[in-house]
Length: 495
Image 1 (cartoon, rainbow, N blue to C red):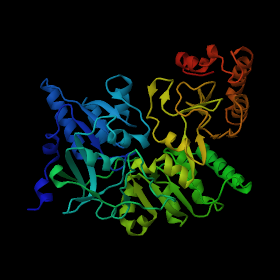
Image 2 (image 1 turned 90 degrees about the horizontal axis):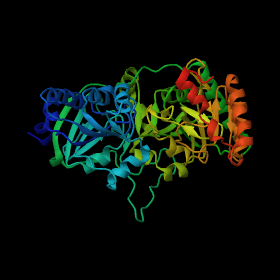
Image 3 (image 1 turned 45 degrees about the vertical axis):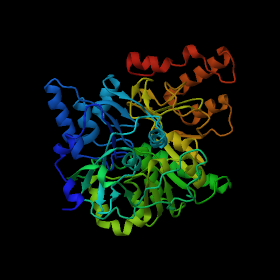
Image 4 (image 1 turned 135 degrees about the horizontal axis):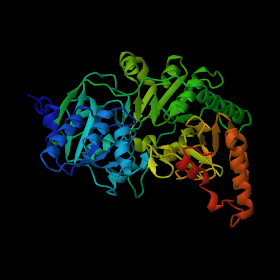
């Protein structure tokens, strides 16, 4: 019997190898490529131990968000003490906001670095989904890169989930290179989206592998939703602005694009597939979403480089069927590379990310509702916003059927400062903030981006601040900065 067959076992047997207090480093990034069988079995084990009056909790590290069979199951089983660096699961979010699970919201591009340098504990167990295991100890990752290489290198114990549904469809897609650590680290020679600098496999020590669990489950990704009118409007405004900037000579042709997650970001990609002005495009991004497939099918995609291929079940099946032809257009990297400030700056990226709210001075809140309630996290938006060639933040101008303005006097939490934001876009219009003072930014954002129902109170705040703030360089009257938020907390409406 070879070493691979000798390590195969049930998910329950693998879960029994995990102890209370372990630090788990799992694969997965934005619902792609996460372990499914072992976390589900571990949740069941935790519930059984809790029923017997025994403690059982683990620290859970990942690339980004994982599916319900991982994040959700473990959260509901009260099996997680600390989660890092990103999540999007309702059960986990509820536990975080209730104080039942501690959560560290981190820049996704720095997570692997924090582990490799010892700033946070190294995983004691790595649980990684793979699409192939070779007899010489090489493994091929599945639908995401994430921090899997780091966790496989750092953890003394490895549990592999072999996804038998994927076959050889991910052979040749991954580039598993990691940056060197300081001091005197050499840069990775990546100059365009398609450049490869490492192996398609990860070499592991078979002696560290304690279990191999087979799965045939695909990633739990919701079906693709066609963009609505507001999202389509925002997407078109972005493409029109890009065309304008190119015509003025301020934006070189051939820049790679980065698009965040969500329906607004999908709308931008959808608009790209229908816009003949762009020609063939490259993506240097985190998440390669389902909206990229029309670009690929129409021959408009050069290369899409990311760290996750996040597709609905039907699209996953379609990808496996067409992988031989499609995968030459794709590169999946480790997130330390996909989100590397150095590489993003050198490649030249047009970045598009969603904001929860933005203020009239140019600050963006990406993570916290009303300043304290965690939504998902900052993700990789700051990795790209600070280092891109041209950066957009997108949001509908209102939420909750018009009760909430996405443009506020001052954000209730700052994720991206006014030093790092360039262009705001809502369905109302676009504000190019580059080269503008605080007052000029405020007037342009109110005029072009705020919903008409909220322009008057926003203007009133600005004029009041110009008269009553301690200084007018940043006309921020603290006593009124959060009036709209306070009104929302009291009445459910900002006006």
